Image 1 (cartoon, one colour):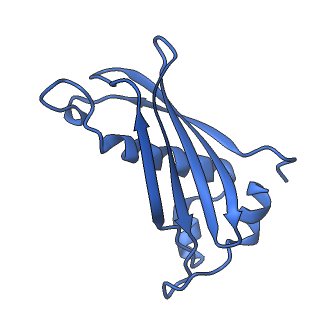
Image 2 (spheres, one colour):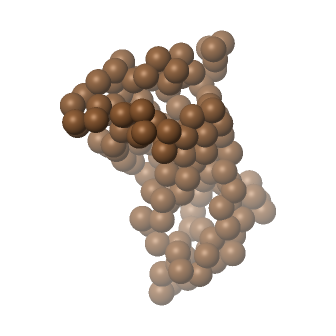
Length: 136
């Protein structure tokens, strides 16, 4: 049980050259890749991986995604993606992200993703008990 606190995870990411654009800054879409790393690590910290979840017949497709960019990340920056999760309803979960440059503790971006829970045939279903318990 979570005792009233949202579960949290911290994921380290070092910006690769391939993630930058011609201007030398991280291409905007890469933040969503880092969000995925964060939520995968968060789920793994609960003792259940995405792979295991899918084997058991559940999927969590993204149905909303938002990112607010504050400062640019650049090649070789050492970043931390701070991820939290919360229940929105019995069939929806929201993850919140903060991307922080560790050298100066600057928050570079914040964002959220909302996910629906689907069963093996793609129909909405309740989140598994183990996830609901962990998120509440």
